[in-house]
Length: 129
Image (tube, rainbow, N blue to C red; front, side, top):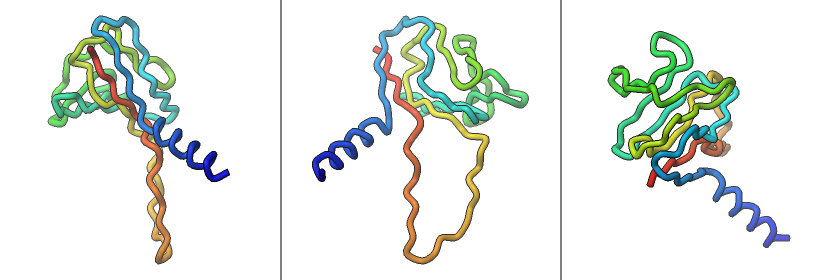
């Protein structure tokens, strides 16, 4: 029984953060993020730059860098209700993709000695060859 529990634990940890490798030029790739309550998508590119794709507000439907400057985004399209599609994958699309939830967890004080582990990461790494 202990062996089964250990194997299941290792399996769940291995799936906690997905990684995908695609060849450049792949068409109509749907990101494996299914965010039913997303207000935005985020990506941290391989060059370290962080960008946000907003689903509402003045920058809706475009990538915006950390300084608020719009980034060319015509290669991406929102797929309702919960993900994005890359029309044609390029090496510049490589990075870590995730989403920002509309739901903000309620903050509260825990009793002394109680610890709550963070949730499983919802994003994934995209590698482009």
